[in-house]
Image 1: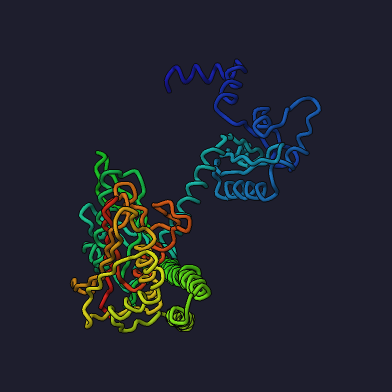
Image 2 (image 1 turned 135 degrees about the horizontal axis):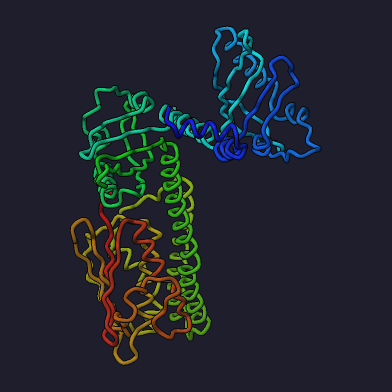
Length: 501
């Protein structure tokens, strides 16, 4: 032995401060037990302070031992000692859990030394204690984490996948294998091939993000064919795996089935679309009542006034004939409204084949008083054979609005004229309605011409509903409407009636 070691042993024997320094600085305390007397146990003050006690003159060691060391721990220690005695060994080590004065727990690693007398009989136990609470808690925490992630890897509701930088499978958990009817043969194959073709581009975009932002999880919903040949939607979280040089060497993918959620969302979208269509039809129905019947009412009111002021029977007969025409048109509108109600209760509104010139002529007849009063010249250039596939009530509304607008917004400076033409454009029959009225400032109003409650002149009876109504009605029949206008020159509307049944 080195002389320094011998010197330390001598100092320890002659100078108590050396022993105190060693046990106070490096240990959680010592205990020294009499193996012949169960209650004869002694421990250093450092041991008791480790457990939160203050060892003073009033300190009751016996009571403290019973509180600090559970019977199970004492039995375990006794078993260790008995084993040492039985095989004539002298030392052992064990981990003991002790209870502190405040009820918390500490873990102590005890290295025990069995002391024997000259006859070889065990009579004392010396224990050297080290506080390993922190290490023990870390071990327990690590075990819990390992158990947690182990449960995730074997989870029966979460998919765990790992690919290399080229997108080839390097790991797949059992749940993924089971749900998609695959086996370990997919390892090394392209993960992209197990995704339906339509979703592959967005998968590649998400993978690209994992390379540019590897420390950020990126989410995507992808569809994969299921083992029963159905297609399942899965929510995935991708994250880049980095090597020691910070390079992306793979992609970690965690996913779960969201098929039911996606299907419900799609059904909700379809229901919302259906609701919007129904609301649009309801709006059209309400607008036809409020706007179109109002036009008929105004015409009837004017005719009744003329009839009352008729100067002779010939004039009265003429006005009466005109009144009959207007009431017939009103009755037709009401019949059409009834058809809309019936059609709406049965689903999509059916289209009917109508002669375009004939429908325009009937509308002009119904408006004959207003045309006469405004001195409007009408040029009807639509050929007799032109037909359109329409919802009759919608066509009635469209014609009434466009023709009445030509009268309402006529110019005060020139004799009003209205020209109606038609032509074929692909799958559409196009009706053009051109006037020489006031016109609209397109630079200012291009985006609001067909808006609700949008007016462009100062007419007192203008409510900004007509163009909004007919746009919705035309689009409901899969058509479209265009407008060209110039202030002081006039306006031309083009109505595209779809001929696709």
